[in-house]
Length: 556
Image 1 (cartoon, rainbow, N blue to C red):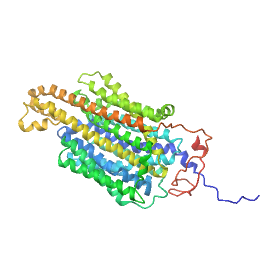
Image 2: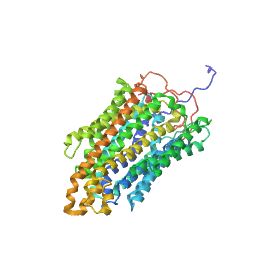
Image 3: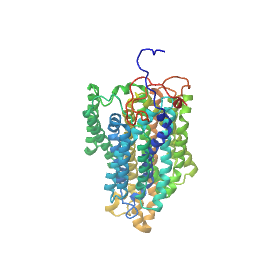
Image 4: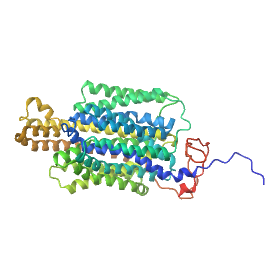
């Protein structure tokens, strides 16, 4: 029988990749876990790091903020660039590099001899994290078909809950039984396992038509983000956003970012297609991410001081008390897709943002004797609210872009999140510090004049000064607690207001899309992208363009 003439049939997607997609997702979660784990561990260690040597390194309030924000600064500034390089040279390569750098930075941070060294090594960890975060989501989008992506993203987001659950407990155990550097050293074996699994299981993928590189756009994005985030962090450190050392970097960063936008609009090969922001699903989602992390990051920072300094719990106890938040986020993230299928993304995300605002408002009720069950209930609702927001907005961002642009799309989303988080720590941390100092200054008469400014910087500094005064210092404990609670209440109210703004943005601008999976016989799905590994094609081989039928294994 003669064979009909015509173009050759398009190649099938290798089923080996699809059979491994859930194993690949496990590796991606493991890689993401080390980034989340480190930050959640650090939250319960801030009090220890503030202690004098040998228990800690004597970090001041501003140095603690920089230990957190040096990571955020580098992370936020390089996320977009890392996403672009992942699309261009291969996401597996960028992910492997990021995990390795993160591990090296962790090992160095474990043996830091001063707050300055810790801040520098945390910046190295930020470089690694910037390569890890967009690459994990980009690989996920490449190996899963659209109908399975919401479920996979829900599981991916749930790994954040796993990290938040394991981190504080692990950090508490390590702080109570070992030296403070163990909270960083624990990352090293996790990194080794992640590197081996990445090398063995992950396929490589990239944009098949990346076009010419845009070095000017990349340079402008890095410089603009560094200046802007540095100014924000510096303002939080000084508790004053009007000084030249704050205003000049912030304004300079904004000018450079405007220049970046104008350059991208004129370029025939832009680093990012700014028309993405004309899509309501994309623009509303990234704005919601920035606002919710602005509201929550600052609160997470002062929650550790509330539980440990005001309530007197140890690092391990504080870690266990945060467990309801992590468990709720982990469990609800896995079910978020089904909730969105029924009620729509806009409704679910709006309710989630309103719940976040309500939870932050509940902090106003907290005092030195609030029952533990109330705190635990509030933290559980907070975790549930986050789980209602993160998966649907992530799906909205990623599915509104072409798959081959997954790396840069993920990077834009995460850049907004990190800049929002940096603003949260800086602005809300500044508000907390300013209000605390104003409330405690009148009670520091027993402290030597030369030490009063340092003693009024934070509740931990005040309690340290009280301990040095001996019996006379006991009179400072109650005023310090009251001053901190007053500052925390005002900061929580400001956070709740930001979350309400986020709820309005979502309610008015986010499309009410569903994330339902199509029926098994729904037919072929959109093009998967070229970079897939199989026994037939070998690692890193490019498959020819054209429509590709979906394997039965994928449909199942």
